[in-house]
Amino acid sequence: MSDAGTPLLDFFFAALRAIVIFAAVLQIVPALVYFERRLAAWIQDRIGPNQVGPVGLLQPLADVIKLAFKEDLTPEGVDKWIYRLGPALVYAPAILAFTVIPVGMDLQVASFDVGVIFLLTIGGFSVYGLAFGGWASNNKYSLLGGLRASAQLISYEVALGLSVIAILMTAETVDLNSIIRQQWAPGAAGLLEWNLFQQPLAAFIFLVAAFAETNRLPFDLPECEAELVGGFHTEYTGLKFAMFFMGEYVAMITMSALMVTMFLGGWSLPWVEIPTSPSIVDVALSVGIFMGKLVLLLFFYIWVRWTLPRFRYDQLMNIGWKVFIPLSLLNLGLTALSGVLGWNWLIPLPW
Amino acid sequence: MSGWLEHLVFGILATVSVLSSFLVVTRKNPIYSALFLVVMFAMVAGIFMLLDATFLGFMQLLVYAGAIMVLYLFVIMLINPRDETLPDEGGTSEKAFAAGVSLLVFALLTFGISNSDLVTEMTTPGGIPALAEVPATHGAIEAFGYELFSKHLLVFEVASILILVGIIGAVHIAMKQRPASADENDSNEERLVTDV
Image (cartoon, rainbow over all chains, first blue to last red; front, side, top):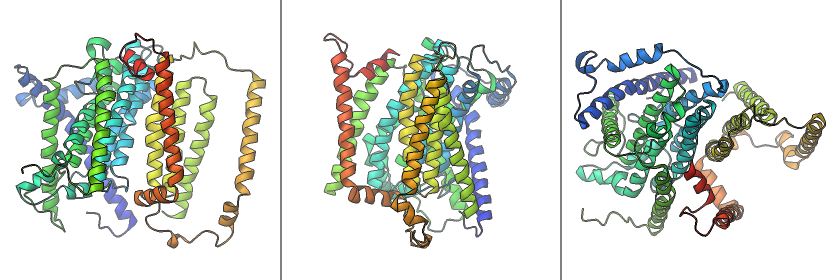
């Protein structure tokens, strides 16, 4: 894709990729919100938003207009600088982390030699936005939300990171495109090459930790409305609130995209041969495959949200420290052992 | 990267890191100090990346800015310092003394570094290898790993033992403070966390 000769042209293509991919991710957000509300209604046997436009499709637009024209209130007693910084610090890392995700065949905004480590590092920064936002609001519910967010994110980041390391150990690379290529094998049996089946424990830990990292139900304790009004975003209105909200959804998309890349074969499908010199059609198809998997995973996120009840905060911490971190360490140990013995401990299954 | 651009980026990173580390000690509110310390870590990570040590730079961000500072911030937020509740800090003489000590350390470091053999070697013409002689993998994860687990294995192991001792110490201190009939939480930190 980037066969440009001069640095200037390289720069131009990089900027183009950044604008197109980031804009596309942002466009998914309103669609996702609509999708979520309709699905929630369906799960709860309601009708959901169906009045604005055909089958309610213009509802997200109406929501955005409402948010943009709301009065931007700054409550008294807030720490003005940090209060303003909060939403930006949630939103920016979430979108920046998407940089390294290959959305199609070798197609990503930028490729670093640290690949997935970049994503984990930058994604982890959103905790500052939640904590600062909660603290600066000068409201005890916000402060509690911010505290919960910082403790929760730090705890689950350990399990998340350890499950990713297990994948990196078997892949022996941090380059996400190589990780995808390693998950490909021809035919239906190629499905079993997906890390979801090669590393089921890591996949499970990653999935749960991703829910906790993105503050999604059943782990949305930092903003749990039954206890904390709105948690860290209680005092925010208008576009500042929208930035928190968008940040959460973008983080969800980024985490799902990483999950697709690391565990579900990314832009590849077992039945489709990976061409060595891809044409533009091949790249477009691979983007389609990636999007299809992403939508399925986002559906799963929403499905879980409207199915499971919320955990209690002490339960959340206990599961994190006493179940998921030991489990991920065990997984890491088993992976290392199987690597040393050259022995694939999951393959001797009947298939 | 071309020469002048590298110098420009280094200039920005260096200026902002010095400025923000100055702000870390001068801000009255510890939340701001924490914020500027994070900025400083990010700038230092940027300098590492400028030196092609991308992996090291990201580790600096992941470990210091992403994990350690979040724990600091957590503790600061539990204290919940507000400008109006913070006590006035020490007088002029105390500040002057602190500035004097800092300047002394700065002078010592400057003297030490500028007189070190390594720097003398590097600043003499032909002292550092030409860019072409630096392997392309310099600073990459593979090179980093090989160096760490071969040449510096002993230091690496000693560091891990140090961290292990730290963990055991923390658990021990937390266990001691727990009354015999306490709840089932394992460590002080965890109890703190669950109380939130």
